[in-house]
Image 1 (cartoon, rainbow, N blue to C red):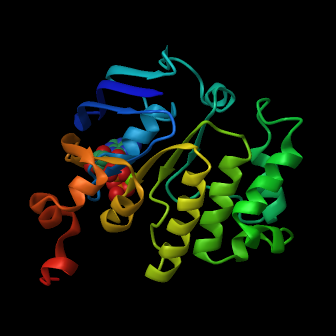
Image 2: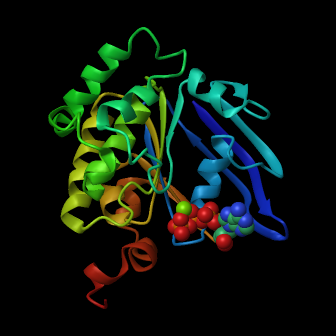
Length: 240
Ligand SMILES: Nc1ncnc2c1ncn2[C@@H]1O[C@H](COP(=O)(O)OP(=O)(O)OP(=O)(O)O)[C@@H](O)[C@H]1O
Ligand SMILES: [Mg+2]
């Protein structure tokens, strides 16, 4: 469904992504794991036309995405939950969701889409009139994901949904992702929380300083000693 080939992203002289290639198949949940500054957001940025690629190709359903503007991507079925969520804090939950239904692709069916989102996140239904900025971090993340789902995407890009959340709240977000995954939606998720992500994803790519340094099926990576050392570190090795 999504193919990235030889992608290079640079900010001035700083090369943030170097010759990165990966693919995401229909219905798959694929994770990108990497530390701070590895280039994860740059990757999602390049896919979602927020960051310019210096070299390489991104293809979605056989169609090159170069030059396709952001709003067209939503109509093509690509939705992103950006780093830091990007919700409108002064607006209610319902208003935030309505903004996600704005693209043509979702219009006309916003009511059905909203029912699906409320089904996935019952709390958003309960709190539909609450001002989004007054919700907890985990709830705000659900608003952000719900808003992205309002455009009825075929491919959901998630940039560190657990960022800044307490472990128990992170668990709630990952439970929600599990339910989203069960709907068959294709997901590309960027995370630092390798343990929870590898428990959820089908496959993962490991990224370090802008390069893919490994990839494989999630269950294999979970048991790979080098991955455990570098990405799952502390807890299981008891060295934290
Ligand atoms: N607009 C920018 N201008 C200059 N350098 C940038 C810009 N955006 C990112 N970078 C640099 O590119 C590198 C990769 O950044 P990126 O945000 O993609 O990393 P990341 O893996 O998402 O990190 P984090 O986990 O902290 O979000 C970093 O060294 C960062 O400082
Ligand atoms: Mg980032």
